Picture 1 (cartoon, rainbow, N blue to C red):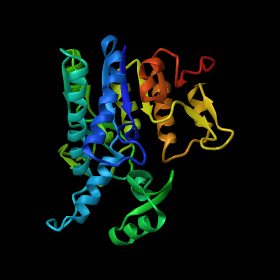
Picture 2: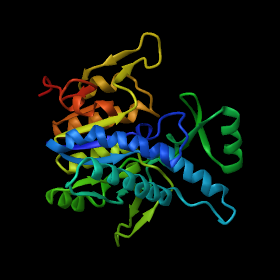
Picture 3: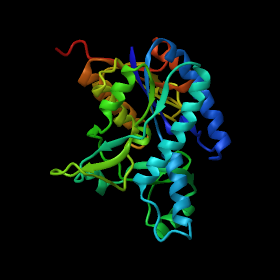
Picture 4: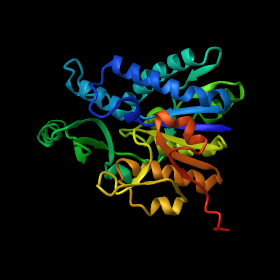
Length: 307
């Protein structure tokens, strides 16, 4: 099978962990171990989140006295693609001796008039106490919103239309490579209608929605969304929370999942299944092999009665 794997940012840097390089290296070694079994038997394309990492770079850039203005988010996104991509490539090279592995900095086309630019929802950076987050909002012009355990910065997250490098990724797969691409949803760009010239934007694209677009365009068989929980849950965090083991796209959308966390993952899985008739699943990183083989996670399948 051809499988597109979307690694959550929280699978690479767990909630509450210090964003040290050594911590991320240890987590990515775990990622490589979890994916190696799949890579032996299937074609893999790996995408990854970058929320904690791009938030860290944004804070550092805003505080750097050598800069007249902070670096824009699209360039910080490109930096995180290189950093996380390098860590993943080295770990997978060690876990899969002899396998061709490549990391590709990837650009994603969005619409300049996407309404998301007027309604920031994408979490980036670490969790702060409300007072600290509010102070950053005043000092740096941030938008903030509540997240699990505190408050975080939110930025615009326009919908991905197309990945610029799709044909290149397809060629690399055809040559037998395992491809790491579309990190952080890809660098958000618009294309000039007349010349095709690309322009970067102050935004972060949801990596799961980008993974769904990429999986559709690559004619993947399976979209695997890995995060830090074993299933989609109804009433997540409540005493009566229940795992969702199996759902159609309509059933998954009907769960009312939170927009800033599980909601985009569920929507990405639902879109891929609806548009391709393939399968998608959401679950924990360490159970990647078991999820693909139907022994863990939340499976999203076509509605067999809809024809």
